[in-house]
Image (spheres, rainbow over the protein chains, first blue to last red):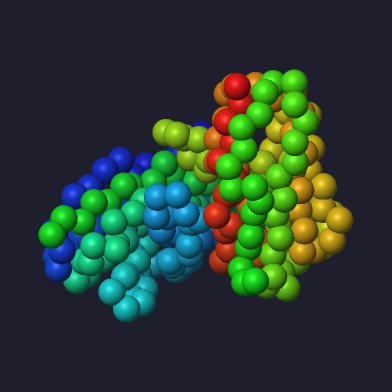
Amino acid sequence: GQNIDQPTEMTATEGAIVQINCTYQTSGFNGLFWYQQHAGEAPTFLSYNVLDGLEEKGRFSSFLSRSKGYSYLLLKELQMKDSASYLCAVRNAGNNRKLIWGLGTSLAVNP
Amino acid sequence: ETGVTQTPRHLVMGMTNKKSLKCEQHLGHNAMYWYKQSAKKPLELMFVYNFKEQTENNSVPSRFSPECPNSSHLFLHLHTLQPEDSALYLCASSQEVRSNEQFFGPGTRLTVL
């Protein structure tokens, strides 16, 4: 079957660094996505990885290891506004190219 | 207007009602999507439209009927829904179906009594 696993909840302190992990088992792979969703708002795109390695974008970085079926989202210099749900999604290969979504990780940033 | 807009933002309906959700994107995209987001469940893709043509229907019950009159507008017609259909319904768009980034609307919070 197809499965995306990520922790349900995490807590971190303002100014700190937090790593949100995502492991996946899917039929084919054509990229992994991270989205941020604040409560009551639309998900917004954060990153896309299709090759192994680290992609850095400001305070946020995303890492992918295809052989391990593993990714993480790294958030540095945490701010209160980073409190949100972080969704991991994997795109199938082939004509389908459907996104398989994880349940999301609810991150609470405390002062 | 920018991005993806959805109306209404909140909707309460009875099981015998008929209602419609509306989505509009101002991004010049060619692909549009309906998703269902329920508590403690992952985002579920319902329908995909590419250049106004439906390209995907993920075994969605017929009580949900999508309509895409043009590339900028997407509707979800609802009739005889069940309480378990209560959820957040999200619309999204992308430049094309194969694009990496999808842009989401704020969603319609639907409650079926």
